[in-house]
Length: 321
Image (cartoon, rainbow, N blue to C red; front, side, top):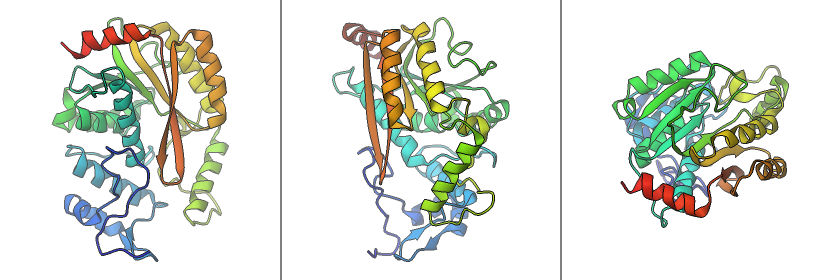
């Protein structure tokens, strides 16, 4: 299929409010961030694109998207850190907005009264950037890796829109997820988390090799991570099964401090285990929300310890003042 020059290539099945639903208009993006031009080429289908196996190209595209669509003037991350695909990250935020709307007569609550907790914010600050730009929400971001937190702090301090809307907290003990980071008087309307999915460096490397193969790239030798990422971002002992299980059990100590706890889940087969854990800790309601990006289906699990009437009261007290 051919397309007219500079026409955006649609990205299939993203959330209806996702700004990238209709694809990338490279002409507009290059006007915003001229350096992106160095990575654009025309593929065999006569479409403008970038080499998604090239980490520098992916970073340039991300920077252009964030500067163009999300009201920021500065964004940069170290080469070693995870460079997230923006459309998929935006989808998570928009589905969180829908989840909150389900507690507010289908109206999405917006503004600084809405507070989110981003577990493992990383160096890129991606969820607060999108959530604040789209809905005006405030965020607290936690991180156990000091260099990543410093890089994130530079992003916050160099963007006026984030300075009073994003608070960063160091998690000094990697055994914990919420402890040391949730304070006594904290109340969070939602918790989000993009956990390390793999159980080892070897498993993470194999995952990268699969991605490169899907992109039509050879995988001989040491693969280059097209979205980069360091150890704590990509893998943890026990993989996502252990991490999310720990997150569930620890969340039970903060039942009244969060409206909805959520976490991305890579492996669908793990959901049964998570549902079993959530039953044990007394979650009142549990949801699995699917998200589609092209041929890929991702999902997040959401749980709350509050009854329907308690959630109604939460909205009245916190969102209508």
